[in-house]
Every structure is written in C-alpha cells, then in structure tokens.
Amino acid sequence: MSQTPDPDEQLPEPTNLRFLRLLVTVLTGVMIAGLLAILAMIVIQYRTTRVPLPEIITLPDGTTATAYTQGSDWYAVVTADDEILIFDRASGEIRQRIAVESRP
Image 1 (cartoon, one colour):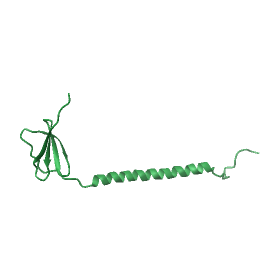
Image 2 (image 1 turned 120 degrees about the horizontal axis):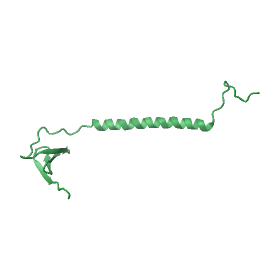
Image 3 (image 1 turned 30 degrees about the vertical axis):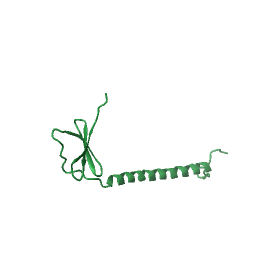
Image 4 (image 1 turned 45 degrees about the vertical axis):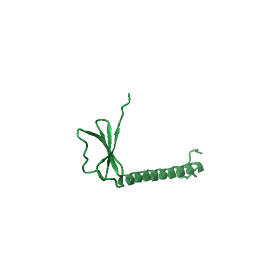
C-alpha cells in the first residue's frame, strides 16, 4: 500500500485556515473602503469654494511683494522690507502693518 494521498480525494479545510482566509478577505475590504473614503474626503476638500483673489492690489510706493495670503475679509502681503501689510478686502485699504523682526 502506498502512503501517498489520492489526488482526487478532497480533504477538509482546517478551521484555523478557513478563519484566516475570512479574516484576510474582510481586512482587504476594509482597507479598500478606507482608501476610497480618504480619496473622497480629499476631493471634497479641494472642491469647496474659495475666496477669489482681489483683482488689483495697490502697494505703497517702493514696496515689493514676496508673499501673499488671504482670509475671509482680509488679505495680507509680505514685503521685501520684512513687513506684513494687512488689507481690508472690501475697501482695499491697509488695516494693519506688522514689522517682522529678525532674530540674531
């Protein structure tokens, strides 16, 4: 007699292996759903309406802009002279000047 199992004979699958296969399948589904949720949140975040840029920004004479940022009712320009100029969005007038001090 031969000790080799018959290739046509179906052996029952061990319980631990069946549980592991189910666990891997469920975890794969959860990972795919999580990835899709993250991508959806990124797309939704970038589709939100943003405040439009002002058409014209009038800077004081001799001032050069190096950076720009904006809020809901204001926008700010950082100048080459290490100064931040905060403008009112509605009127275009300077609300505040902030001197940026350099550290030693």
